Image 1 (cartoon, helix red, strand yellow):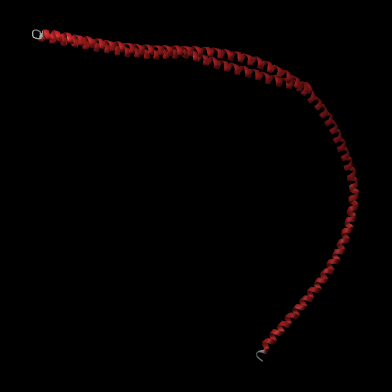
Image 2 (cartoon, one colour):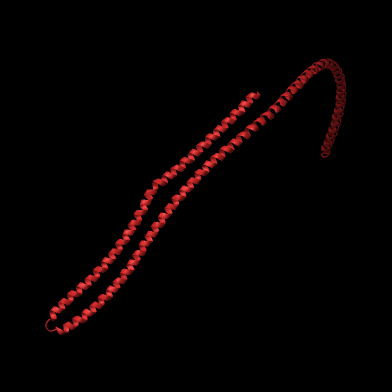
Length: 303
């Protein structure tokens, strides 16, 4: 009995819940049908009202649109006619502009041909002047180079001749010195033999005096040979120093002589270039000014 009561409670609770759910579903179904009927009725009323309002509006809009269409047609015709007239004016202006551009092009081409022929003539004249000046400069430069080269060749030839003379002199002097040495040796030998004979003959009486004279004579010969050799060496060194000093002095003199001349040539070339650039700039500025003036004048005449 104690276990059946909870079961009955749960069963009754379940049945009551199911019954409540069924009532809830029935109420919701009834509400939905009622709301649907109300919505359909309201929709029919709204549709009828909208149709009446649309009919009234369409009638008013048709009457108003007729007047607007008439006014808009009038305005469109006015704007179209004005546009067509403007386009005719533009076409006429375009045709006139084309004719003017053709005429101006023809006149400009003729002026350009004249300017080009003038420019070509001026260029030919100026190039002829430049070519003649360049030929003169090259001719003068060639003369200067030739004179400098000939002077240099003469100096080198002179120096080589001096060196050859010195070499020949040294060879001749050496040969003379050798011959002199041989002769001196022969003389010394002869003197030695003669002195030996004399010494044998006069050995007893004049032994001391003969030795003194022999020593003095020998010392004199040795001093003579040594002084001759020293003098020849000093003379050769002096000639070599003189030649070196002459070559240095001549080179310095040539540099000092031609330095102002070279500076003047450089200044003359710079001056010629500056004058040529000035002439070209002046010719170009005159051409551009004349061209601008001609174009402005033709434009003013055409306008």
